Length: 497
Image (cartoon, rainbow, N blue to C red; front, side):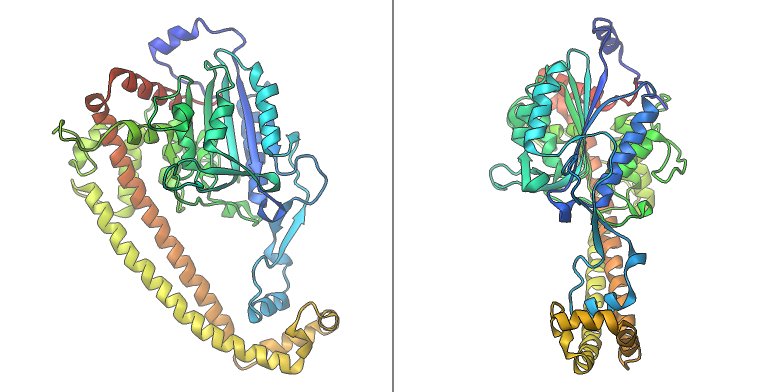
């Protein structure tokens, strides 16, 4: 499906002057920093994006992929298939407290048309060789499905977060902006970034990635899985895509109209203009992603740097605590959809909607603490049963005290059935199994509560964004307002020729 943006008369007029060859280009940066950090979900994200581009650009898309170790035939990808893990191995790992990376396997990544590895050198080379070819009117969409880290200097430069690259490398926001600065300033850049701490990259909107400076003269916008100081959901070795719930799963399926499992969805055309914009897709992810993410876009970050919620010289400014009906009326269609649908899900009501979200989050915090307390109680009973079985097992097979003992390997090869029967027939085995499952259940309850807390944060943040946007004209100069409107125009763009 091809999606076309509906442009303002001013922008449409300016496009008449663009070169006839203006086109869209795509750069994907993906994978982990090493085989143990390169989960199969990252590979599948790239495959999903390639599929989307093939549908959206039937004549072919100019797309290059930098992923993990590139074309190296080595085993760089981590995956996990629960069905391949024998019961005895699960029992022994739990008994001897060695469950980390249990069942993880490795293979070579398998992405068609990989250009090169995802290293700092190859990214710099792409910009020097390919980026230089982009010109006036072209668009560059950069999709990042990888890992990220927090800023090194959290006090003085908290938004200078990291994108981790292959072979333990990384690139920080400020260095990334220097690469963007090598492009023709008339090239529009759109980023979709799903790594942890991705929100720091929203500073691409500013000169030198510094929010105290003016907006960049270049036209850049982006969408980010989470804010600069929080981890993001996703990145799993699980081979089952039904379990993938990270940000770009929802972002791309909103545009495509199908889930990654090929199930049709109702596309979120929130303003009724007959297409799904990037802004629509972002709002869809905020509404539907059941994760810990508090996702943002560049205009959100811009407003927090350039607008205000309160000011002694402006008494009539809106805030998140302004009556809900007034904020709802001030919001854009996509923002109204986020507020209304998340309010319904969280059962928030009344004209003090931000306060209701804060109260809901406070109650959820108590539920979270309760789930954690129950998990710890189950863990204590599990450990008592575990220790009883472990001691009995070592009395029967003392070689198992060190799994690397060659004699232990011989026993595991020759007496597996006897070992499994011994464990399962132990008097504490039932408690061992039941309490382990209870621990998992309470952990999942805690995670579910954290997801609902994140949705409360999404409501509060959206209310703040609406208020900041309404206040901007009162607290900022005309040039800043124009820069903001340009950001919003870019975010309202769409995918397609």
